[in-house]
Length: 266
Image (cartoon, rainbow, N blue to C red; front, side, top):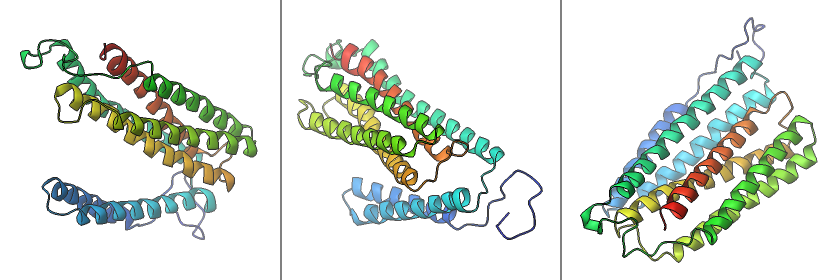
């Protein structure tokens, strides 16, 4: 119930009417249409317009949610539980998203066809050394998981300065991981279209890299909100969601490192 109305007689939050869900749906449709047009070499401008529209709608929608939580204090304990459940279900859907890529990878690895010589990885593929850049990136992500946990404990203890320091380090590590991943891709001995190994490799590691970028932005927004004093020990669901998402990204990378770089690269 909006601020200024009669006293709320229940712990739930009845969301005010908003145009952002509908506008976001149209923006996502425009982005998808632009992606198809780009893949068929028609034009890229529709995709650019779609991406810009999605970003604007997301910013405005989330701004309203933050306003509900911080300014209007509408996120009661019951509402926060619902938000946590929503994030858990979202991460569960992301797990199944990556299961598809791992399934494709292991299907080709356990049963290599005669087309690729009956061996995995294919004999003509020069794979990465798992204990070179991939291992360094593993250490970076594991360290970032420690720093985001440090930030969480600082929020719980109301130590804002420590929380800002820890989140700053976490965001920096996320940017460093992405930079090293881009460097690794630029020195790859195989391209996306060079066979089943390269296709599954780039799909799995590429989408993970995309999730790292999203998670880094997520944590950067939390860093700004921490500086503004939005989080309290009792109410910091936005930060919890970012931390859970980041730990999910860490775990996926550990599976990628062991399965794709170490086991599948030998």
